[in-house]
Every structure is written in structure tokens, then in C-alpha cells.
Image (tube, rainbow, N blue to C red; front, top):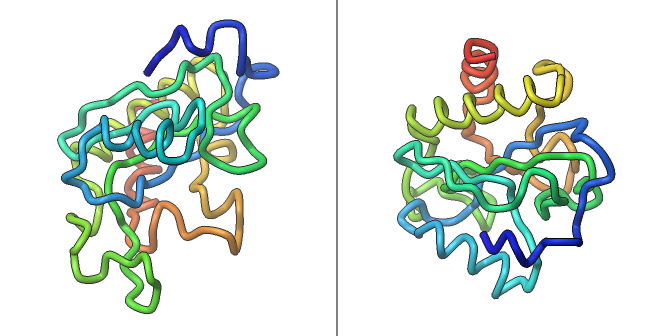
Amino acid sequence: VKPLSLEGRNRRGGNPVKIIYHHTAMHDHKTFQDIVDEFLITKGWSTGYHSVIMPDGKVEPFCRWDRVGNHAKGNHNRTLGVSFHGNFHTLANDQFSNADGAFGAKEPSEEQINAGARQIALWAKLYELDIELDVMPHKDVLPGHTVCPGSNFPHDILKKKIAYYY
């Protein structure tokens, strides 16, 4: 999204050392443009995730891979961020919960998991990252500050798919 706007700025300090996966925490019927607008217009940031995986499995590039994304506070410089579009947090006592399905599907689609796993495996290969140690959910990067990618996210299935594609 707007690659020329980052020309000469927001360069990463080196190759990524981690891949962080997220959920957008938005209704899964929102468009990719809605996600972009949330970051660039509503929040006023210059970047967002490096890619977003839509419910149908389409990979939407957002931020240039050689640039600093805006996806995990304090951990932007040497990371890549991929987000699965939707809200997969289903704990009923949380104000942002999707326990009742008000934000769409309660877990990522099979197409999303496959596409996200392929994206992560590609990045891990390109940047020689360990898929067991260097790929993590946002909640593990900022413990206690976020539940992202949600309480109902199938971490084990994603990890198995990443290993398969890797």
C-alpha cells in the first residue's frame, strides 16, 4: 500500500529476526481497504502489517518487507507482521470478544491458515529463521497487554502447516 510513500524512510535496521502473527480484530466482512484505512487514516500511521490474510485465503500485501511495519509496539524494527483478518477472541468476559459471532467467524478459515502458513514459511526460508523459535503470536511478544490473535486461534494447526510448507 503506497510503496513510494516509504521511499527513503522506515527502512528496517537489518533482516527480520522474528515473525509475529496477529488477527485484525475487525469484522471479517470488512474489506482490505477498511483495514488499510484503520491504520493509515484512523490511527494516522505510515505502515501496518506486512501482509493481511483474508478469509478466502487471499494474501494482501500491506507494508514493504524491507520496511518497518507497525504491528507490535516496541518490536517493529526487526520483525515481519502477518495478520489473519477477523476476530478470533471468544472469551465472553472481554469487551472485544467475538463470543457471539458479532464480528464474523470465530476462527480463521482453512484457506486463511494455509495461506498464512505459506507466507510465514516463505519469510522463514528467505530470512533463515527458525520456525519453532522465531515465529510467535502477538500475545507472546507483549504478554499481558494483548490477547492477539485471540483465544480461539488454532496455534497448533498453524505451526503444523508452517512446518509442512517450510
